[in-house]
Amino acid sequence: MQANVQSGPAIYGTSTDRVFTAIQASRCALLVIDMQNYFVDLQYPTAVADAAATVPAINRMADLLRNSGGCVIWIRTLSTMDDSRWSVFEDHILAPQAKSLRQALLHPDHHASQLVSNLDRQPQDLIVHKTRFSAIAPQSSNLLTVLQERNIETVLIAGTATNVCCESTAKDAAVANYKSIMIEDCLSAHTDAAHIYSLANFKGVFGDVLSVDQCAASLHKDRGSTNSRQVSTP
Image (cartoon, rainbow, N blue to C red; front, side):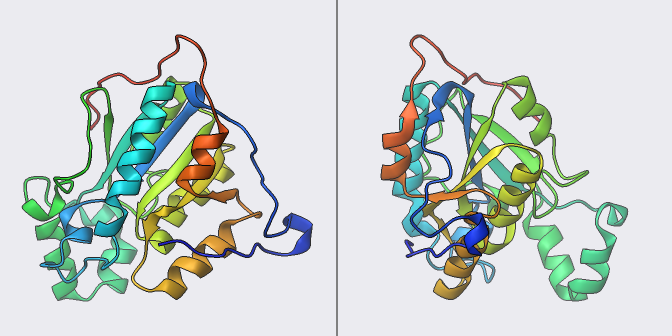
């Protein structure tokens, strides 16, 4: 889903401004967020209708970054039976039936929690598990540690939903002092309006919004460098 994104107030830039004109591949990570059956497969009521259509663009972006020396991180949302981890959301925002369904379907072993099968995952890619919308929120995941260990300075955000977990992670990355870029054709939301407004809110204030083609043109490969290796993350 692509959009003509207008940025925020003029003090933060204009719709045609590029915030980041060059991306050092060896210090860049593609964060692919929540491309799980729960959010993509239309047999589940939580699925985003446009999410499946972004898979080719996500695979292309992942391939481009790997071949340039960057790393790809697949991020899964998993449920926790420990209510104290996120009690406000689970006990006050979710209805009891929705809470039970979410906990069951996002169990690590359930089909719904698995990454969709047509994602081009490679052995050197990383997998991070999160429990909250943002993968960088406190107690959500070990993503910050993973990024720090690899000396990452730029994160590319892909996945679903644009305006929920993707925007939350992208904003938190920016606040944590990463160059944060949302890849518009690798993102999807439940409505076009939600997708467009999310990107418009992000651009210029928190980071940049680019297409796969724009990212490809901006990638700078360090000769002989690589930042992808297989690890096991909790």
